[in-house]
Amino acid sequence: MDELQLSTEEITKMIDSYVIPWGLNIFFAILIFIVGKFAVGVIVNLSRKLMIKARMDTILVNFINSIIKSLLLLFVIIAALDQLGVDTTSLIALIGAAGLAIGLALQGSLQNLASGVMLIVFRPFTDGDYVEAGGASGVVEEIGIFTTKMRTGDNKEIIVPNGQIFEGIITNYSARDTRRIDMVFGIGYDDDIRKAKDILAGIIAADERILKDPEPLIAVGELADSSVNFNVRPWVNSADYWSVLFDLNEKIKLAFDENGISIPYPQMDVHMDKTGE
Image 1 (cartoon, rainbow, N blue to C red):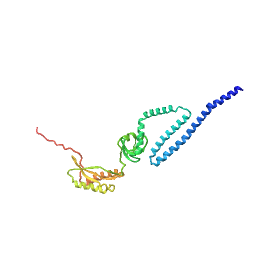
Image 2: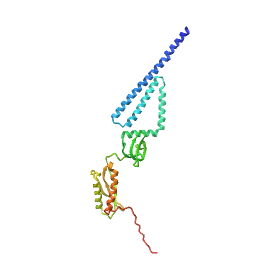
Image 3: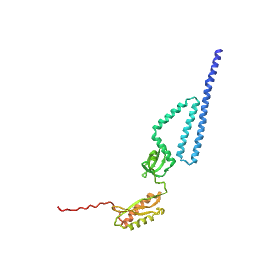
Image 4: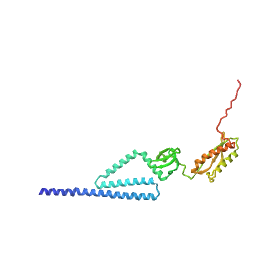
């Protein structure tokens, strides 16, 4: 009976010393994780609503929310483990060391990621713009976190790292509603300059796509070696740039031919003198 009583006392002591404290720790750890996970969801949803209300880009909203969610969940997990008695100091140090190692290994990717965030925030261009950036040119189809996708005029797909774009010069041909077409037409020195200028002015005035304001410029820009060069600079809507450029080249060439205006090309005259033997 004494042995049985002693065993009961030992069991009771063991329960009081180990089972109940561990059970409570496990219960509170699970409670911390559940409540923490719910709180993380509330915070993430609230931050999403605030960023959308601030009209931030959807890609940036998703990216920031994923970072916030990951960091908060990591904090909740560490708090739950700490409740179980796990040495979280060593765990935090291990996570920091692992993060540093991963950061060094993925230095180029992190640079592209940071550049992608900057492109999304500052928006030097957007989807549908025709740009020249990162050593490539084309219509922007997608701005991602790590890369930007472009489509060339002959329908090729180009993927450019964001770091390469953000560190270089970005030329956005679609950023303004209007563009100026810069053309140079040369005529011969024997041709009538006034007549050529009238022909150019008539063709420019007849094209309804060419804007009246700013006024088109037609002027003699250079007396070159073999030609008199006219600078022709009309303004058009950005969407009409290429069609007007191609049409003007054709119309002006045909008009010059019909009116006897020559378009000279570089040439060299060689004179040979005969000398007596």
